[in-house]
Image 1 (cartoon, helix red, strand yellow):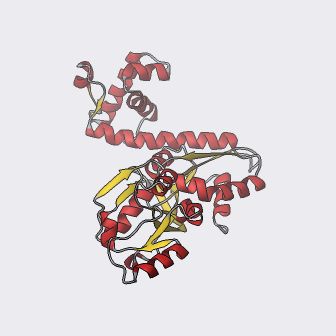
Image 2 (cartoon, one colour):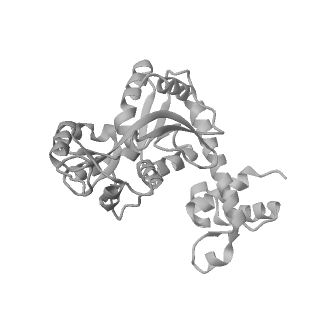
Image 3 (cartoon, one colour):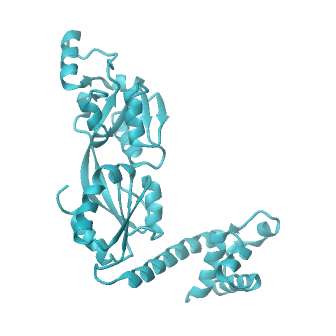
Length: 317
């Protein structure tokens, strides 16, 4: 069986636009021609792809199970087609072209700028674009070939996406100034206060952490997933949490006394130096860190610009 790509393109337009009429406008053909193309594709494949009854009842477009499966393949096929055409149009060594990099928020703010600077020094005529979003959104954009490569804060499990360890990043738990553990730490209170003042840190127990209000990122964030994973390994489940949409927002909320959090050291380093937050330390949770990952689409060959940027990424931090 050979798949007719013209008919597949029409079917994919219908699913993307949400109706036969909208697909017809996008493709600049008549609505009957769209309906005929989808029906012919169903005939050739001997499956029903779209439930007509729901559309006639005004309930919108509903794909069958087979239609959903085929549409996922169509999405991948036409995303790669677009990427191939765009690269060939721009390909002229590294004298011109565009490189689109996806990055989760922490990487975009604290890691990526130095590599962008190094790349632009070597290849100033390549247009750079950075798309910043949480890990889940970045993965979807990479799959759709809207990005050339991506850097995120954790491994991802999505068919067609490959991930490779890139860097290790230190994490720390932070609390507002003046935070005092409820449990005994094994030191006299005067000795503990002296050490905490000098080191800007507070020794706490796992029980103390469970009783705290935790400030966390939104669902889909790599920072959130890693934080919850590290806490769960210690059998800790915070009793209360507050969701805030950026690491910088969380850091300042900690400084204001709203709660505690686990964040990359790079995010809170200045606040630690200024004494606006303190580090929480637990004997059982020393040396917190997470891996940063580089993502690529498996079936998309790297362009010359991507290859050059990968060489930059492999250099010193």
